[in-house]
Length: 99
Image (cartoon, helix red, strand yellow):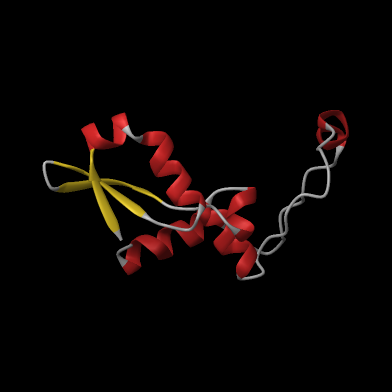
């Protein structure tokens, strides 16, 4: 991984972005302290944030297939709570466990 200081980055950003497009990762440092990393965006993370890509890779979420219709979403019924639970009892039990 190559490193570049802030002044070099400011003066050569276009060149650095070209290198990143080719697959290189560049660490940006300020007074020898790492502050940022320029790296190529590829695969699922190109569609969103890295944590979203991680969730998609693990199969926990799927990417959206279309736009959300706000009116239709607002008209959907709210989920009903599961029966048989006592919130006060759960809170007191959690306090006794020391959480």
